[in-house]
Amino acid sequence: MFREMIRKNKQLSREECLKILQEEKRGVLSVNGDGGYPYAMPMNHFYNDADGKIYFHCGIGGHREDALKKDGKVSFCVYDGGYQNEGEWALNIKSVIVFGSIEILDDRDRIADITSKLSYKFTSDAAYIQNEIKNHAHRTRLLVLTPEHISGKAVQES
Image 1 (cartoon, rainbow, N blue to C red):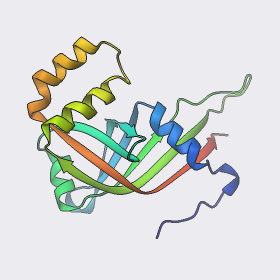
Image 2 (tube, rainbow, N blue to C red; image 1 turned 30 degrees about the vertical axis):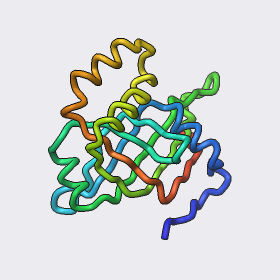
Image 3 (cartoon, one colour; image 1 turned 45 degrees about the vertical axis):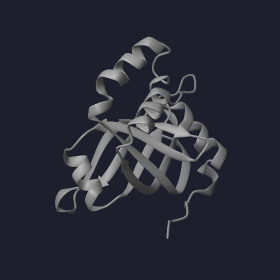
């Protein structure tokens, strides 16, 4: 069902893919939008080692939610900051693509737990995190991406 990578020498191991999903803060979530057009948006994410799922928090309603209610199949792309070899212009990056299905959850306790874990990727200020959750959890959705296929690739721009 999912295509094999053509350039096998560029393929990342599963462990490398999971490391990128764990460490990077943002990616681009793509859904099947209006009229069959892709709808892609940058999203903060949290990869949960315990269950192998990727979690997102977002507001209630809107284009993304409407699209997900019609079709939960998505792709999610994450890439690292890359590096340049000295004296070269090309950027070397590693990217990961996840294909899977998203479930929309309204469970307030779960939203608070996952949002807290996600927030620690950005700040260690526990008081700030708890205050944000207290003030905004009531208008927050939790999206749960269950991966069906994960692949990664090392790319050099030159």
